[in-house]
Amino acid sequence: MEKLEYLFSTPTIKPASGAVLCGVVGSGNLEVLIRPADTATSCTIQIQTSARGFGDIWQAVLTEFISHHAAGGTHIAINDMGATPAVVTLRLAQAISQYAGGLR
Image (cartoon, rainbow, N blue to C red; front, side):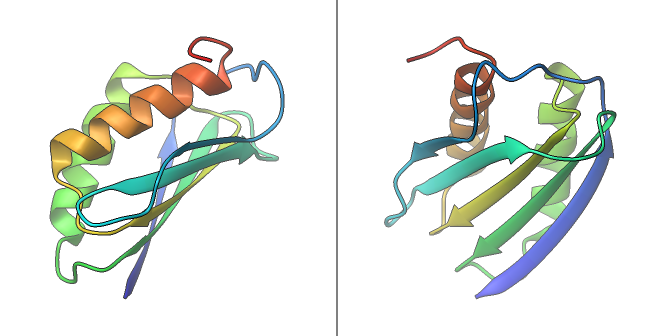
């Protein structure tokens, strides 16, 4: 397992309720957990992944995601089992939408 951590400055998102869990850890998939954090204008993302050596790809996928979604005031934990960038982006979008009160 490899552990990665990223910090992004981003506009604040208001949570609809508490923490959110989206996805299921399994082959080719991942789970995303979002919970409120103390800093309103930044987002921390922590990843535990079974696929080593993909830090640059994670950085690119997360930077693209944050450029389209406000996530300030959150801590995001990702448990990955080899998900593709498209699956990562989909799960993050589902989780942030649910966190803001969208998808149920």
